[in-house]
Amino acid sequence: MAAMLEHPESARRAIEPGDLSSRAAAEAYVGGVCFKLGPPTLIGAELEWLTVQGECSASGPAAGPRPQLSAFAAALGPHAPRSIAPDSPALPLPGGSRVTLEPGGQIELSSAPYAAAAELCERLVGDARHLRELLETQCIRILSLAADADRRPKRVLQLPRYRAMEQSFGGIGPFGKLMMCNTAAAQVSVDAGADRAEVTARWTALYAMGPALVAAFACSPTLRGAPDGAWASQRMRAWLRLDNARTRPPVQEWSDPIAAYARWALDVPLLCVRRPGTVTNGDGPGWAAPPGATFADWLSGALDDEIGRRPDTADLDYHLTTLFPPVRASGHLEVRYLDAQPGDTWTVAVHAIDALLSAPAVIAEATALAAPVAGRWLQAARYGLADAEIAKAAVDLLALAAAHARTPSAARELDDASQRCRRGRTPTDARVGAAS
Image (cartoon, rainbow, N blue to C red):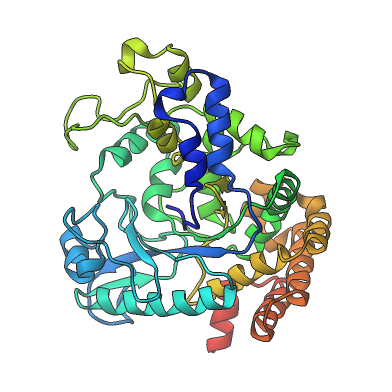
């Protein structure tokens, strides 16, 4: 579910599978794997879309059925992910993006990493166009929506991982299945930093800016199946509410994100435990994890009777993919808090993150501008730009981004977005207004 830059394979090799003999060893492994140190030069993105099967027309209804997996496989051919076509070569699209499928039939493109945001956007726009053309051969349309306003959540991918996720989240409330099946995001990935000080500055900035940028790009006011209430970003509401231990780390207390992230990761409850050979739709335990048990519990031997083995680094790698904080450390930093945007306007979010992290002085200024609303995730998701203080931070951050954009066209996009936020208009409002 993440756009990948590159994992630090050298860090993975530093600790062999048998070396997870202590919590200290596991924390060292997580710190090395999740935060690749080096000069920040690369940027990537992941785009998700809802999909609908129906008329072979761009103007067809948005409330049609979810496409069959066989239709996806036929449309994508050699680009089909192995989750739906096990023998597929899973080739990237011409611009380097790889196609994957989410549990509810959302389709996603994970870009290749690029040194320039402009090149990333150009290649990803081309791949998105190519993806639409492929899907249209089977009358599948992609919808630029961050939340499904019409359909009940329904899982179409019958994989053990998603079955275990649905079971785990189902015991908490409705938001887990809604997140899995009925939401879509625009994610941006950036390098972590050259050293611990730079990692801390970039990490702190991305978290501080989060609520303001959530509001700036919020465009999912309706999500079928969510409890009553008016929210600017129902998608972000679902993420924040589905499992607090997994989605809301106490970053305000972290002076050293590398060490703190490793400690937090080990104390997050297991979402699933891989059991090779498990029957996908069997009635047994499948990949379900012992309720409430953490990775640290498994490591310590507390789960020996229930799981029957101790974890190795492959298990820890997998556990790290089941953490869903607003910014996730995956070697690089994944910004996961932005709604999917209408049309190709996701490029604004890419340019915003790129510009706001473009230099140490800009990072410091952005962090200061965002500081008054840092941590106000729920208010940003609920009220969006209707909250005056959050809106001011959004306007100021986008204006700062425009001033430090890499290209004139990016500067124009960001200045337009800042003015849009000043007027209290959502990305969808602005697109509708421009078309009328």
